[in-house]
Amino acid sequence: MFPSFEPSLSMFRARLAGAARNMRRAATMAGAVLLCACSHSSGPWQLTNVTGHLPDLDFALTADNGQPVTGASFRGRTTLVYFGYTHCPDVCPETMARLMQVIAELGPDARGVRILFISVDPARDTPQALHAYVGAFDAQHARGLTGTAAQIESLAKRYRVAYQMEKRDPDGSYEVTHSSAVYVFDAQGHARLLATDHDTPDAIAHDVRRVINDKT
Image 1 (tube, rainbow, N blue to C red):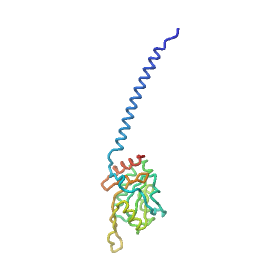
Image 2 (cartoon, rainbow, N blue to C red):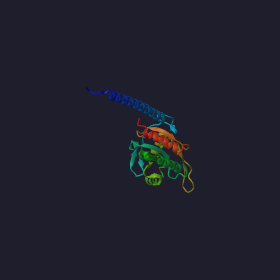
Image 3 (cartoon, helix red, strand yellow):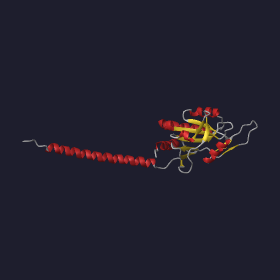
């Protein structure tokens, strides 16, 4: 007489039912996590969202190493663009210092980020001067860009940047009044965000990380 397999079958069915319950529970939890992730990524931006309102990153300038550089040179990287000048007494160094805080907060994500410091004072901001200036902040992530007066004026108009040279002092020095916003472009070169003086490094880092992780 053959032994009965009923106890074994009953045990197998019980284990199978338990496994099914565990799988349903895991699927439910995974769905909840995914829903939370989607909700988080689609939530409101802390910076100003300019997606679709500004043109892609496109220019032809001279880098701080003296070599020609274009917007396409930074494809594949999230790019933070700031228009300033090396003789700026306060706003420019303060903005660069804030961007250094952003880089620090991004941690490993900062490897794919570049800061472009575009001069609105090409008469004084030679590639050498820009190289020393941005290098004093972060030689790894920051790049200084300059060009002819016509190139800078055209690029400023492209991104609605206002700047104006003030009256010269008797010693020949002068200041340049300029917009202080930071433009954030994604890895495809699309304009995504605009950061102002009122945005904290935490807010900028938060949204820049979202742009970095957005693969769409």
